[in-house]
Amino acid sequence: MIDRSDYRNIEIPDELDVVVNGAMLEGKRLRRKNKVVGVFKRIGATAAAFVFVFIALLNISPTVARAAYQVHIIGDLCRIVTFREYHFEDDIKYIDAKIPKIENTGKSDLEKRINLEIQKKINDCIVENEEVAKDYYEAFIETGGKPEDFTPIGITVDYEIKCVNEEYVSFVISQYETAFNAYNHEIYYNIDLESGRIFTLKDWLGNDYKQIVAESIEKTIDGWTDEQREMLWEDISIIDLISENTDFYIDQSNRIVVVFARYEAACGAAGKLEFIIR
Image (tube, rainbow, N blue to C red; front, side, top):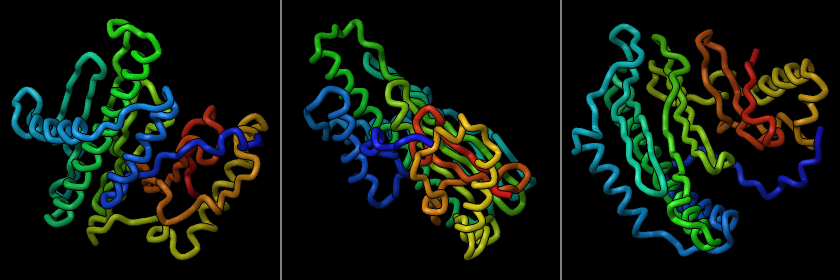
């Protein structure tokens, strides 16, 4: 295992909380600005205007807001569809976004709550990365670059359905950009269709979920090569990484797959780590 001291100050992007999202985004934005060039001018009104324009385009423009099409259906119980597709580009960025929604669950309150949350989080992701593109462009110009030589920052938001059946829906929304891979992040949704709840590892595995998950992961790691194990942080404690907020999804075989984001359990070269819990 390797020494993680060189990575102590790397921020791990967490799933954006609906309530405190704005404050978290501002903090991330300021840290990114220090990383790119040092000090940049704060962006405020531009971001707010971008949110307004983005939502307006999604809901008004026929060239942006396309008819929803079905992606995955289980009978008449539940389906996940692409609610909107959005593309925008200018001299400093290009944005491609797919916005999913859940429907036909038989629980309208659940659908409304989840779909509004999804739309807000995707809007926040795009605004955050639009700010990154502006910061990076300003850094490029301030350090002597020419506007015509600047390579636009790509911003992509997409989703992947992990499992849909009569009992559960599991999918992940991914946001990534071409310039700052360390800030890419994913938002996981695991929904119990009977209760209408988003469930956690504890809900699935019971009160001993931390020990169950940690023991399973440690068994998997025991089967790794020495080279793989050396990528883990030297002082790693798997059980300390596990909580009710740990990212996971359900695969097509109804197995829990725990996910550690890049830098969370190992060096950046290891990328995102996924462990099937057996």
